[in-house]
Image (cartoon, rainbow, N blue to C red; front, side, top):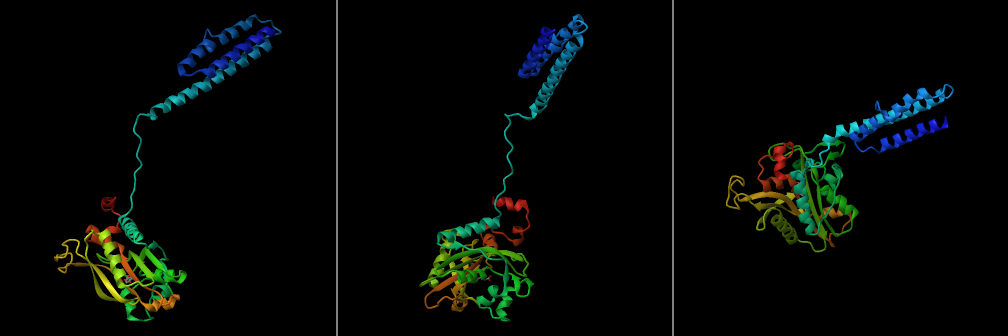
Length: 338
Ligand code: DAH
């Protein structure tokens, strides 16, 4: 009897090893026929049980059944695996070109901001940022706008609480920076600003870049030199600028800076309304009153400042006629500036 049992065990092991080694569905089928087919070795074995003596038959029969069962089960399992591989196969065509994910790009505003900051960066100014919700003190008072003074009317704003407002300009960061830093200060401040304005050249939310340079011996010539270099780098190398007297509470003297019209070059056209010039930014020499708020000595240092509308600069550079294009999120517009 032991010989028979050993034979059953041998056939079983042989079959299991062979099945596991099958490398294709065809090979597996051959093995099925070899072991489980009508003339297969396991089938033969089952048939031969009739010749076993009555006492041995239960034990041998049990062993044979168990062997058959194990072989059948493993065959099934491997067959399933081959099926799965087969059904996935067509999806995996490694010769197909890959799918490119859609790539975005910077919005024109971000691109213009970066470009402007980079130009001033090359001139030695570093980037500083400040809060968009600002106190009355930083937005107005420390910038020399006295309470109830009419100069505040130039910047009608959106209050969010008592003496708390959405900043109307990036100028408060001048004070915040000087408070924290000893001179020299060479900074640009990019950021969002807010006003109660809404027409084709004004949006309630817009973007500015503030500039502040406070150092020993800074004069208006430095202001003009820096802004001439900026206009040349941002618009075109021979762009002319002019300074026009103006008023801001935090600069004295103050100047509006114009560039020669980007369309007609100065002859006069519809864009510049015949004047030959386009208004670009506000600027001036830092009013010594500000130094009083931040503890600087006006006998030691002097400085200039400017505030530039990023939306306006982008509109001038790219000939946009309506500021709303910048905020509508229309991809037909945005994609032109990738
Ligand atoms: N803050 C001013 C505005 O938003 C712009 C400005 C003018 C900024 C003169 C300056 C400056 O730094 O010197 O209208």
